Image (cartoon, rainbow, N blue to C red):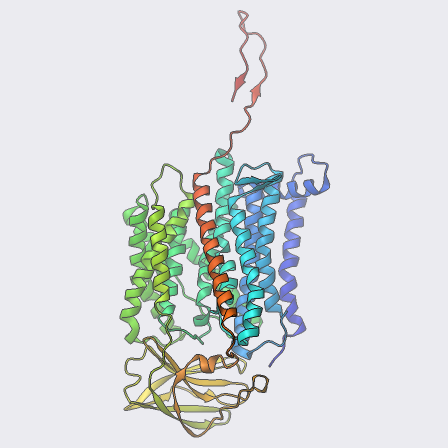
Length: 595
């Protein structure tokens, strides 16, 4: 196992240094308003700078920008960590640079919420509610809950690993709780900006900088929702391939529809463009500077154009109609373009066998996600504008969860294979003879993948005879590499080993690269997750209950914040009194005039 280098810690220190420089710069350029208390003067100076440059109340922009910084730190840490596990396997320490970035980012959400509360209190904002002597905006409550819930997953994750070993997967319950907290954070950040604008009322006039930050929030929302595709981004998925188009449809439906409603014309396209910029940056850091496997990603451009076209053709006054038409467009034109991109970019082979099911279930997913996105986008609406009924948003959320739960089964079929290797040095061309010969005829995925030898290598299996297939290129079969044949047919997710090194730390024997081996296909996690062990049932029960409770709390608070922000109105300001003017000709003296 390879260890992180000392230089890797630069990526932990750099964003914190940058944040500190920006804060000091804002304080230096701001106006303390004659405040003599040094601490209050510091905060007031930052607030005045942010308000002047963005046209949004300082408390809202301070919390949103701090939250965006924290979410970005966590995102880089997440993709770095997954890439490390794909390339090298287990870590040697708990507090690695990537883990530290994740922890800093998630705690940063709590810090951002606290910053918003402090600023809102000092500015005597009317947003949210009073708690003791503090003014707590609804969006800050949501952001703090997301951060606390995500950080709370760390002890649960440690309990899970102690009971069941190290499972290198993004989709364990505790890992999902960690990821979801950071991924949903940008929603709270956008709501914070909108809550600030509502708080300012007529005094709110966002500048180009302020509008740009709001577009950035929606790009971050789309990026956050796309993190659940991580196992497919790195090309070693452990779940049904059907999940990939469904997750793309869900992310596009929620984020793009909400962006178009909140930002107006071009909003969906702007969110997609920001998403591409953010993911290219992450790919450059992880795959370039850090020299790991490059995480792939969808484009969302056709889906964004489809949403814009739906808004242009139908308008957005009828929110539900707009959402349903946008969802249908995302599920057809959008998904077709994404699947073509997956194929053309070499991301992974796309089989036509699973296409009807993917498009059918993708349509249900996209429709439900679009209605949820319309519900989120209503946080930007005024009271007198008709919106999507809360019951419809709730029903759509349930449909979305059911649609995403349907591909969960991972079964094993009765398939055997004779695997032959044509060695050339450390690599080999793989030939697979299936029994029965038609076992891969209706496969959704069938190929060879190698990982944890310092990168990832994949090869298609081309049929060269009845039930006989050969890899399109040689794959590594020595050293720390792991190589296997993967086969998916509907709900059956299977694999057969080609080469696996011995792992004394977990007592796993080697599977040598033999010239020929007869083997039965097993569940793919038997090979992908050799580190896992059987354990007592109660840690799993505690983890699933914890994740469920936290998720329901997040959904409830996020829904409450959208409703409260939508209905918020600025508190009445004290009436300004115009001093009496000198007596007018004729002896008439005007009374005080209130404005």
